[in-house]
Each structure stands twice: as C-alpha cells, then as structure tokens.
Image 1 (cartoon, helix red, strand yellow):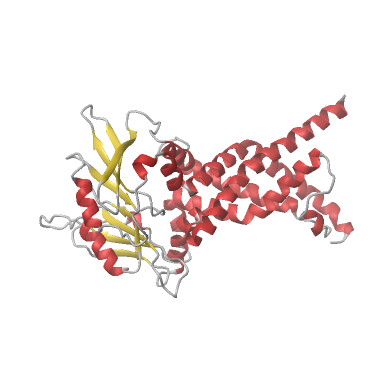
Image 2: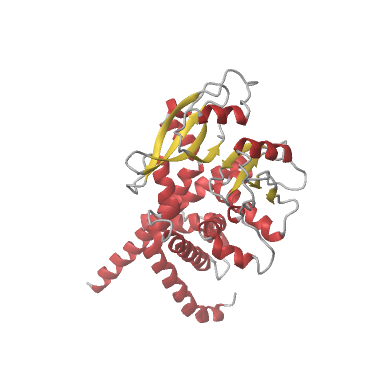
Length: 391
C-alpha cells in the first residue's frame, strides 16, 4: 500500500480504535464471562461426573457390555418418580462410565415447583440416586454445572429479559472482534511482525503482542460461536432472517395436533422406538418429553452415519398422539436454511467434530478472558503514560 494513502486511513482507524476500545471496556468482562463459562460447558458432563462421582459414575464390566433398551431404563426410572412428575429430558452421556440422566419437574408439598435429576445405570437399569437441580423459590441453582449453564445462557436475567439482552451483547461482541481484526491488519505489508511476538521486548510490548496474537488466531471461531449463540438465544429473530433466503424450520416450535376425540399419547418409549427405526445407526443423545396437549416429542441421535453429510447429529420431531414425524432435521435432504440451522448447536458445542472440535471450542472460550485482561492492561498502560506526560 502506498505511503501517500496512509494519512487518509488515519481518521477511519481512530474511529475503529475508539469502537474497539469502548466495546472492550464496557463488554470485555461479559466476553470473558461468556467465554470461560462456555469453555466449562463444553465438558459439562465430564465435570459434573467428576464433581459427583457416586451419583453419575457407573461400573462397566467389560468393553462388550451394552446399554439396556430405553424402555427398560424408563420403566425403572418411573418406579422412582413422584406421581405428579413430568419428564422433561433424558440425556445419554458421552462417556461409557457415566450414568444416563432423566430430568423431571415436580411440585412439592409447599407448592414450590422443583426440577430434579435422576441418575440411571444404563447397563443394569438400577437407580444411582437423584438430586435437586433448582426450585421456583430461588434463582440460585442447586448444582455447580447448572449455575454455570444459567450464567452462560441468560446471566440470571430471566427467560423474558435475557434473550434480547444476551443477543444484543453477542452482536456487539462480534463488532468488537471485527474491529480488532481491522486494527490488526498490517497496512504496509509487515505480515511477519503482525503474526509474531517481538523478541526481547518489554512487558508492555509482550502484553500487546499477546492481545493481538490471541485475537487474530481466535477471531474466526469466536465470530462463529457468537453467531450460533445469537441463534440459540433468540431463534425467533434469527430464523425469519434466514427465511428471507431459504425456508427454515425450528424443531422446538413444531406442535402436535390434538385429536378431535380422546386419544392418549403414544408414550416416550414408543416415540424413541420410532426414532431408532428411522435412524437405526444412531445412538440416543437427547429425548425431550411432550407434557402439554400440543407439545411434541423431540428425539436427537448422534452417530447417524451417512456418506452424504459430515454432520452425524439428527433430531426428529414426533406427534405425541400418532407418532407421525412432523420434522426431520436431516442435513442430507433439508433446505439450505435448515442445514444452516442444524449446524448451529454442533458448532457451538464443538460436538460436530468430536473431541478435537470440543477442545478447539474450549480453547477459543479461554481466549476471551485473555483478550479482556490484556486489553484492560493495555488501556491502563496508556492511561499511565498520559498522566506522566501531563506531569
């Protein structure tokens, strides 16, 4: 780039510098909070198991031992549930020595709504135990991982207030990352300097190099994580935008159609059986209950092998009365918008690429506190330098 052109860029650069500075000062701590809690949640099941080994760990007899069928596990679980319990989710673990967990809601004798978790040995069907996750009389969860989860997803602002606020914060953080890239971009071709630490430098220079190096190496993935985070907290705003370009469905919005005559639900066992017939190569990951008249079962499976798509995660939405499949999140046959939507959770969690993907998301999350601390130190250094010049 010609040196005569550089003076024209001075003013735009100052504008971007101010945008980057003030967004960093105002939202940097939240970026660090989202990043560090997100890193923990990448391995939430492993951390939870480590913190609660008696409840969540099971003994594996040998490598050929297999899980009991879903209906056996659910029958054992129901025998341990209160009569008014409503099953919300059943989650299968990533680790072979971890329990299957079943979450349910229950109203106690004091009319307080509680969320409980039951741990089931998937090899024997025995109940390991249960624990209270949260209750309606306090906003503070009862477990560490649930505390981190709520802090990450809604900052304890509540389900009505948090989605727009968290979505706006994520959008502003994307601008902060982009402004950092603009400021980092070498205008006069000093690419080697842009990608390296200065040798034998001062602490101030090392802090600056650490900030810029962390920023450009993590920028792309941070933007993808922030975009997928926006999709998950405010899908009602994102999906209409995607639909401007391609038809898109969202599985949790799809409802069952209550029949005109009295008809009992097919039951969670039957819904899972239909899903496993539809995708026989997949293994269960999530099963969402259908507890209201118009709700639908959602059954998600991992390891659905196909040569047509790298993504092996599938979710089926099923009518609670008929068992008809209302939606099939299959990237091999969906629209462009549906495929984009189906990739958001696997990308955000890193599970789309197995353990390497989870590790990459984990490291990217830790980049956020590094960027905040080094950026804050850089700003304080400049403030101290200004004070010295004034004196």
